[in-house]
Amino acid sequence: MRMPAFSSRAGWQWQAIASALLLCVSAGAALEADAGTQPVRHAVVIEAMKFSPEVIEAKAGDTIVWTNKDAFPHTVTAENHSFDSKGIASDGSWKFKATAKGVFPYVCSFHPTMKGKLVVK
Image 1 (tube, rainbow, N blue to C red):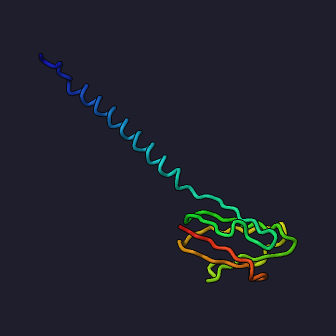
Image 2 (image 1 turned 30 degrees about the vertical axis):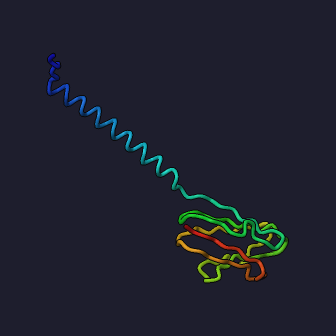
Image 3 (image 1 turned 60 degrees about the vertical axis):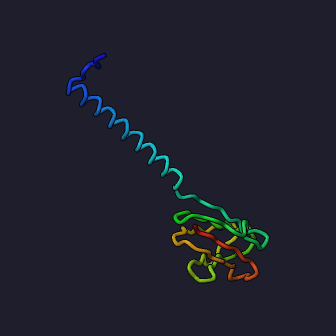
């Protein structure tokens, strides 16, 4: 049995359509992959002389926001001094964008028994 022959023009059109479909599928997969890497905003509450959660895990590019719910000021000060909020007033907040990977223990410099840890992956 003989297969019908496609003209070179018809073959070119089908090839163009197939290439366009492949491009669309590839672009969709790339967008889906990027959706999982969008920066995230994390919240840490300062209340009752504690950071909650005490350990926060983030990815490079994420933002962490500390909010002070105590009636007096606190700080978020990395032990290696890579970040320092200075004083965060009552009902105030401070945000930090994590850029370097690593483990960053931090304290309140006004109340050194208050400790937390930022883990950036």
